[in-house]
Image 1 (tube, rainbow, N blue to C red):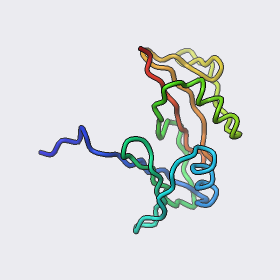
Image 2 (image 1 turned 180 degrees about the vertical axis):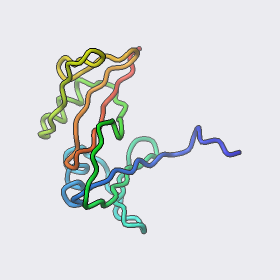
Image 3 (image 1 turned 60 degrees about the vertical axis):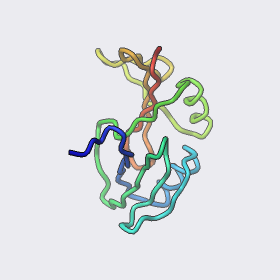
Image 4 (image 1 turned 135 degrees about the vertical axis):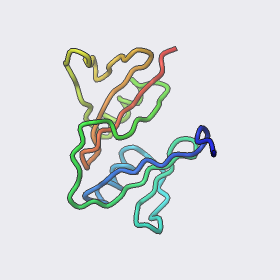
Length: 129
């Protein structure tokens, strides 16, 4: 059997408006565009050989979970940078999930959430050492 431990990953995100989503991922998040794939998905390079594929879905989706998380070295710095791009972070005050300055400490990591233009929940996370 083939091991997937070192396989690259493509996260596929549904988008209602491809132009709007592409502007967000390229302009706001600063991801490197790779263009349209043969299947009609729009590809972005991300991480260490990983990719994000935007798939057209005109009716959209409704999800209440994290679709993708970016591991960062300094969550506070990245939050400040993204807020400078107009991105609004979510804040929570629930029994098992409370944020302070948009950040929640979850065991061995810090995390913060925001939505893309299509309603997908995205996350930043930083490992605590």
